[in-house]
Image (cartoon, rainbow, N blue to C red; front, side, top):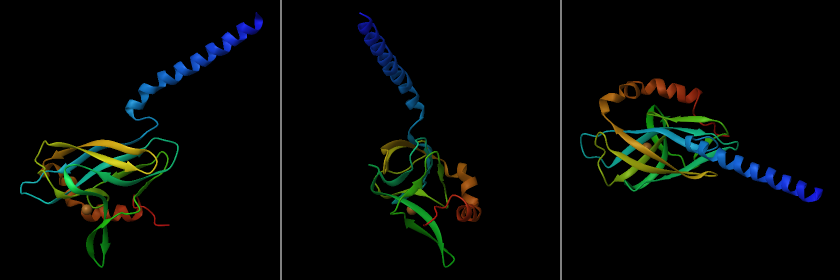
Length: 179
Ligand SMILES: [Cu+2]
């Protein structure tokens, strides 16, 4: 009889463990233990455009290093991970084929003058107030969905006029080290 009691205790402990696990699940909704993207935005266009860039903050809330290796969207024919780089005094856009490294716990800001998601062959115009989904593809976390909000061009003065400033910060800070 004693034995069956202890077996029951074990089963109860296991059930409690499972319940704890279930109880912890809702916290996933607010990003804990996940790789997430937030505050995604793109600049509104007043004239038709074929390309556009989106910016956002990436946050790796997992315990393992990850990497943003690509992006998918139905808004454009092609969607790529890009960055800006100074080459011979000229600002150039570069397709970051190796992706963006996102170490465990790290946050990476994609902003004007630096990393961005590039939409090429736009199928829809980015008018103010529009929202559209983008799927980010991470090496380990897999697909991560984010909604991009299209904001008025004038509202982005901060990012607009500070290109040089951003470049400088990029060189010393958020720029991924090529090792
Ligand atoms: Cu680009």
